[in-house]
Length: 447
Ligand SMILES: Cc1cc2nc3c(=O)[nH]c(=O)nc-3n(C[C@H](O)[C@H](O)[C@H](O)COP(=O)(O)OP(=O)(O)OC[C@H]3O[C@@H](n4cnc5c(N)ncnc54)[C@H](O)[C@@H]3O)c2cc1C
Figure 1 (cartoon, rainbow, N blue to C red):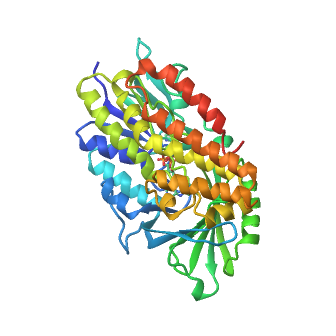
Figure 2: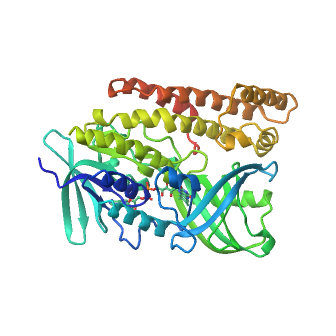
Figure 3: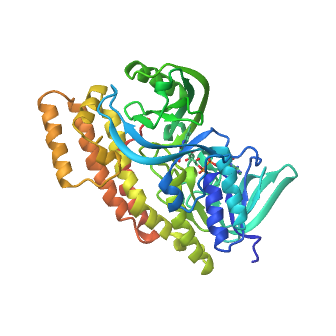
């Protein structure tokens, strides 16, 4: 069969543009369909942050002062206890960008690499061949229904996951939708501080409230962000609680933005015959802060290498794309499973006072752990001793200790399981049963 395209990607935001760029650069014929117009892509909210180091790591263009997408750069992040004590400092440099303008820049990067983007083109369904394998994509535009054939279809449609949720059961990829229980509801308050002494030089986070204060494009201002499970109302209630315990500088509110970001383990399998899921559609966000732009790129770099080999071999079956699952799950997937489990259990089991003690004694919330450095046996033993001391002196509740210890135990078990992700699809069913069992014990942040 002659195909119209090698690859069709659903969604032209950060994930779809990046994967299109990677594959077009390798010489493949790539088309992206995007339901929004070019003037509307990436307008869900204004400011996004990326680590400066990630631009080089993923070969991304970095906005410079004066560019339309540039907002600010800062160095230094502090993580604080519920009562604003014991700051843990890390020294990353973070670049703030206007999401719409940066998405357009990534669209143009994909186009320059040879990809084609059709805007105002809304995916409706896949087209299957006589053997029931994906061989094309159907979509609608202002002119009516259209379709194109392709060897590989990629879902980068964000939280709506319109592609993978259309797949028939048993196609190799979980086709269940991302529900309100699987996301964080994020509210961003753009504020202007009254006193120049309060203008920001870095950013701060308070994990016990899932809240943060970060710079915005206006140097007099800040973004006060908060995330919560289940609803925006819960996020607003959390913000009230946060404001009562943490003294914020005097401010004037200029606008509010809202959005959701997946907060659940990523898909176990990203691949079906002629199909890959990525980005928010595959729940590839970071467990420590819900950011998802570059964490998804980790999977896409792997996916591009594996898909390249599969396309060259003219075999894009799930079996031949399986290495995407293996390499991702054994790497970032395993690390994220450990962090997500520990955080869910800690946050759900600890009161503000427990958190305060954790910060004071460097339990979980130490500069080493927050900075993503590997912790060794000595750190674990010290943490254990401090936990016991906290329990004996009544500084932490037994609920918090049980929850934290079970989080660490389950986290390590999940880490080890992910590191043994099956080499081929044959071992997947029994691996999935074990993983489901462990994740059920962890529960969701929203439970
Ligand atoms: C308030 C907030 C702040 C955040 N801040 C950060 C941050 O600072 N740094 C960071 O890394 N991450 C951040 N995140 C997370 C980050 O925004 C996402 O992880 C990332 O944008 C996901 O990109 P994506 O391309 O996978 O999905 P999306 O950005 O959701 O893009 C999906 C695209 O698919 C298109 N689409 C949907 N349905 C169809 C269809 N039927 N047909 C065709 N096209 C379709 C959409 O129009 C859209 O363009 C934040 C999230 C929120 C909610």
